[in-house]
Image (cartoon, rainbow, N blue to C red; front, side, top):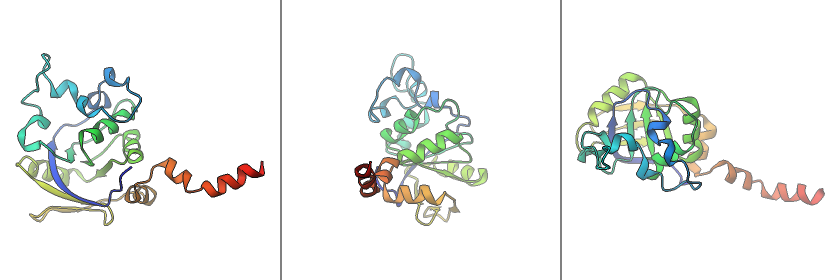
Length: 193
């Protein structure tokens, strides 16, 4: 995983509530076993018309959202099944952080385990960000080390994250890398058996 400390990136407004994981990455695209390649299928049923052409009315297809790395969504983002492919698709598409009033618990954990930062803010703050991100080239700073979000026009908010996950993200560690840090102890144990 890549380390996440502080980013200043374009933010996309995605004012939808109860976005489930089957909308994030539809089931027909879950056949891959690697973590990459899912971005092109992100929100497939919304992004594309039945004829396969991009839907010009879909939020992420709008020119002002091209290249956004921060997704601002509404409550209960990531509900539904617990597929780990959902954060993989969001990451592969290019998102580094998602801001919403609430997330489904399993989705939230899957994001953290895969290096995607889910930020929970109160609904009023998210509503402000959704409105601001409607404008072209709206940039937002997400500072994980200081647990804050701000922009150049005076918006500022604080968020909380479990210290364990903060340390993991700041260092770019996943759970396997944490285990490998104990390699010396594991080797000693194995030799003693």
